Length: 488
Ligand code: MEZ
Image 1 (cartoon, rainbow, N blue to C red):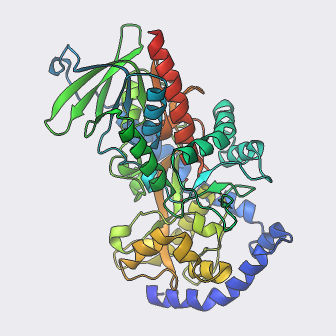
Image 2: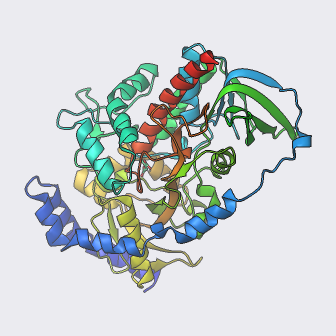
Image 3: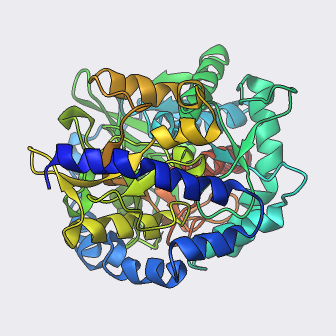
């Protein structure tokens, strides 16, 4: 079936699906309706995981090549006298690095913040859908903990996860105090929405550019606080003393191609994700700097890594137009009714299952011939978004998802009227450098915050838990590392 014929089928099937959706939105026995719609859906979802992208072996193989790489610098190339001597060196210009820098500076530490690209160029700004925090009266950190543990296949480090969910409300308040404008309802109360794998609504959002808004505020604060900044200076190697403790890092100034040696009492790595390595050949939702730099570097310095065989493939990356391939189509849109349908306009999965299950189901549909192929040879299934306005009221897409409407409209695609093709996109590194609740790695004086760390999310992160993680652990690492620096 051609792409256009398939699109017609999707449009024709919309009225019937809308009827089902309205029934689902009614409060009575949601689960029974889901089962009726997709009998045995839990079992089905589980089966799909077996053929999904999270299998691990190939990933481990690709990663092993990376980890076995040798240090790119020869010791004779490095100046013995440091160019900078600071209490705390923070490496990474995203939400975790900026938060750590603000916290450490407030605690009185002398901070140097080094970024690979510009301050703010990070996966934080790519995060659209929201930040999970248990703040509503019907919710609790315990529920948040249990949902995340289930989502992570019980492989989450319980202490890390407990700290994450318990500090959520305090962190949300801190963000609002420094200027983050979370969406509010007409009565002025915070707007709290649902997300995949979550038993209660707990997403705080800034429309569909939540990460961008967070980073806007954090960046302003870093500049206002006059944190010392070294932009375009990626890390090349960590420095350690004879006893294995971290003592600084070697950076490379991309402007003059010179190495920069920084001696520090403590270091925080906030180098972010891995998407631009395109593991298993997938497109990615990640920014261009996300090349897993922190992992091999920390590993060479002696740090333990954890859960390295597990990556998150977000189910709905755009497939066309070509320049948008891999770009995130936020999960939040499924929580307000967007539906996934195959070439014939049939639904095939409960869209609010966890991401690994939904991504696997999309891959299965395509692998078994029920996907749609573009002229460029990319495969996908339809995400039918006009449902959102129909179910929630005219104008919902334009008001709550302006970023997405704008992005597609650049290519003359009006998502308020037509479905778009989607396929899983490499989105998040579930594992990373092992840390404790203060963000310290197994190497003394080496702290890690954000996506470079591993353990909090187990084998599968729930939507919105990453924006929370970068702030909670950015603050904890900032606090603990500056305290350590005063003790040395
Ligand atoms: O946490 C995320 O990855 C997220 C909120 C993504 C999204 O779908 O918007």
